[in-house]
Length: 126
Ligand code: HEC
Image (cartoon, rainbow, N blue to C red; front, side, top):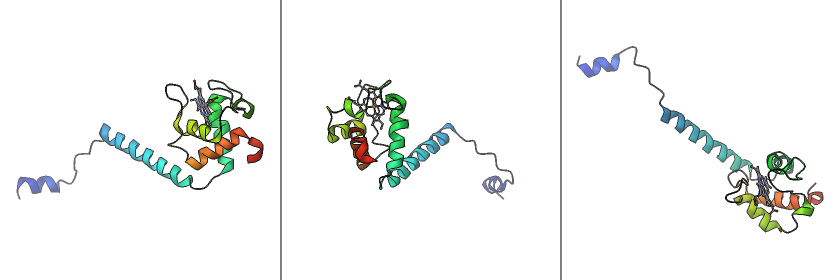
């Protein structure tokens, strides 16, 4: 029996150390998986979920009632300087060098457009 075979048959192999890079790889895979599920879920518009997004996620900066906070007042009467397309653009791309984040990784173009229409005219989107 040569040295290699003996090592190979060792009944108690040394424990494999989990390295930092394995953890990083895991994190990257989980993030990719989350994005993939978000993209799949994004194929249909779920008004309830999008309203929650607006009031909770957007609301965390723009105020739960959208009256403004860290970010400006987003109530319909205050954003009439925007049209659906410009709002959709801001939502998808964020505003560079400000805390306004891009939502592109999380919502689809259709969803961003829904949110834009909802902000401009909440009544028609009930
Ligand atoms: C992390 C904080 C934060 C979150 C979350 C956030 N925003 Fe913003 N948003 C801001 C800030 C700050 C500004 C103002 C940026 C500037 O100085 O121009 C802004 C600006 C905007 C504007 C431009 C307003 C105008 O009058 O031109 C729109 C529209 C907007 N946000 C929509 C949204 C929507 C919709 C969401 C949720 C999908 C959202 N924001 C989530 C911080 C945030």
